[in-house]
Amino acid sequence: MSSSSQVRVGTLVPIAEGNAGSSNGTVLSIPIYLGANVIGRNHLVVVDKRISRKHLSLHATADGSTEVVVEGPNPVVVRSEGQRRKVCAQERVKIVHDDVLELIPGEYFVKYVNVGDDRRSSALMGSSELKKGKRHSEEDSVVVKRNRQIMEDEALARSLQEGFAEESATISGLGCDQISRPLDSTGSSERIQSVGPLKDVLSLTLRLMRVQGLPSWTNTSSVTIQDVIQGEVLLAVLSNYMVDIEWLLTACPSLRKVRHVLVIHGEDGASVELLKKVKPANWILHKPPLPISFGTHHSKAMLLVYPQGIRVVVHTANLIYVDWNNKTQGLWMQDFPWKDTKDVNKNVSFENDLIDYLSAIKWPEFRVNLRVVGDVNINAAFFRKFDYKSSSVRLIGSVPGYHVGPNIKKWGHMKLRSVLEGCTFEQQFCKSPLIYQFSSLGSLDEKWMSEFACSLSAGKSDNGSPLGIGKPLIVWPTVEDVRTSIEGYAAGSCIPSPQKNVEKDFLRKYWARWKADHVGRWGLCQFTLYQIIHKLCTTEYCTTIEIFLALEEASHTICFTHFMLFTASET
Image (cartoon, rainbow, N blue to C red; front, side, top):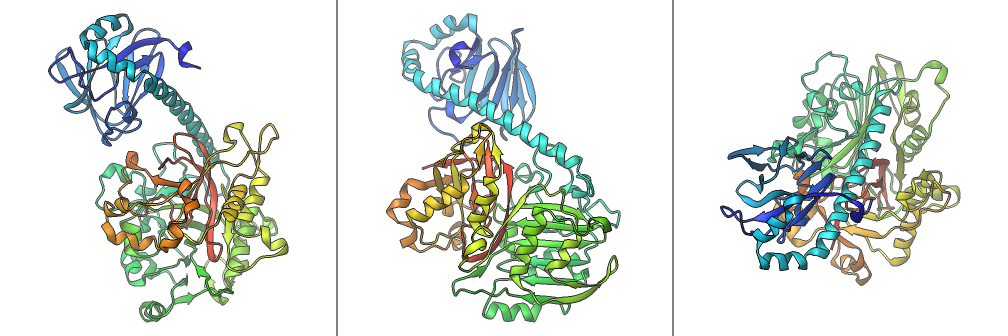
């Protein structure tokens, strides 16, 4: 619906503290329309990051009532009939004509004026403020359109997420409650409260990792490594690039009780010797073979076998202290039961993708006795014993080497292209922006960037037409982003890239900055929710498909596709 066809019911008029008759000059005059209205940082003359982009919403109804909902983390104050009330996040309050809002307690004062009293409010503002209002009229129009788009996009996002939550709640085998109490036969629920079903509509299988030293609201529904590795684990396969076994055993003492642990790593030199020295006697170390000299093993994943099934985890953090405590990281996890004997030969795409990748790693087969199935060989084929039909994602693996023939579409972005080519999307996803995020930048060129964008834009809209190639952007930190992160300049060590790669002229048009202040995670150096997964397909204020993909074609990596919401800002 265009703004011209909307019914205006009132205005938020900026005023100065203690003077209801003049503008404070820091907030724009904000028209209020029938229905939902978003108030946020875009309405400020000067940006103040304490004001969220979606700071509060006003819901005006036909009966003349208006309700304020605080959407951002910071409280607002409502002054009504001589009373001053603080309203915190997600709280609601009714406002009426002449009530005053403090967008930040003690700052940014606006008065709510019914539409019938706009003429009086204009007289109170004075001629200078009216002239300023005219200068901002065009900006106000843009803000109104953007706010409407926010509400529409978030409504769509909620419907997508609620649909996924409902689907997850009804899947067979391990239900969504067992995602929070996964395969833990001990009956204890104390350790797993923080992994319990979310109170909001976020996906049941996606989590942020907890960051130390942040306000509690920023760690809502986040997890620690103890939340992930819990219960009666019979066998653990831990895949990662960097591994600190001493820290790992301190952070997750329950690993000492796991009888069979395979660590697949990318360490070399003295680091490997240290791993051999400190590892428990029952742990097996394996570094995958690398057929090309510049290959690396980067896959950050866990396979945890329980009496009731398996937990598959794909995450973004090295198994080291700073990654699990000082950086914004994320993980995907889902639990699967053992296969019924009648289904032993039935396979799904998730299973085939996982087995293909595990086969490429080529760890030395070993034999163990698991109390559920007896003596078994632990190899790639062992993981076909689990029922993955409830899988909610597709795995995209990447292995080093030069791939030809059928293998071209088996790995990396070409695999992703083949998966997306079989998908149909709503027309709103046509030419969705492509946001790339990664921690190290290789020697890119325009040809490869074009090829990559084609892969990420594959698929058709529901009217049969191609989605079209979206605008690519690269999220990359500035010096100031590094300096103001939790770790300061030391955090720069996690973004190793030669200056000659970063300063290529053709890349200038792609640069964008990571923004996550609305969830309290902006000043954290990894600059991302998901680091080694490497690819976020998203747009500011728009719901899009998010594809997680490794940019390092010379690396062992494993990732997945899913639906999510993120924001990025173009520089």
